[in-house]
Image 1 (cartoon, rainbow, N blue to C red):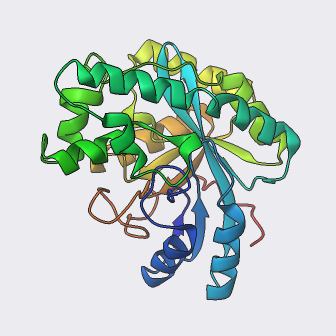
Image 2: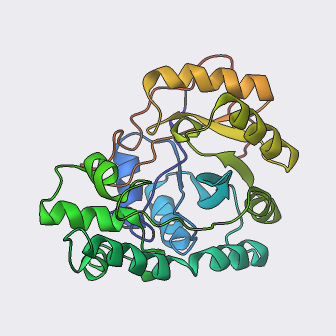
Length: 278
């Protein structure tokens, strides 16, 4: 059984490793087919593809697009995309534009609770200034010693309802799936178990996603608990979705699951890669 890892991040978005170093880690950890899915950006794909090719590691070009749905942020992964597609590139550029303004507002709000210089501090951890995110602020707060780990930073400062939280209007679900499909890709709802929806809202999300052309959800992911693997396998089958698998790895010491370390998909689901030619 091949070890597919179809969700991780480089320092082109909010990971800590370069695309080249990610490829090397994936290969060393026994990944057989690898996708790098940076947030709202495809600028690292060429480097990732070249590094994977040099290692003899089959590579799948990918992206993770931020959307706003029912006033929450949801992530849609695109796999097997053409990263040169103009519809995709224009769409991603349109949602990256608001990140700096949002980051400066976050910094101003953190000033009010005694955390100074957060914008400049976060920039130290940013590989691509166009993609400054809450994760970069979290790393700065850890450097200051105000929290012991990333979950505590988000629960005390950067999560919804806290001083450093600033909402952002991302793409729509329809837009994200359209951009992915225009680029020849497959649209996947990332880590559905992370979202705080009730059953009625989840049902509406899955139906709308399917109606606009989405075809898969992540089932086995580093952002799910072990019991959620079977839960979302059942969801995939209920709605007729393919099942995807990915660590959601961001960096050593930060991620719950390392590249390649997930268990297989549960039995009875159809993998998103079932008809791929690699």
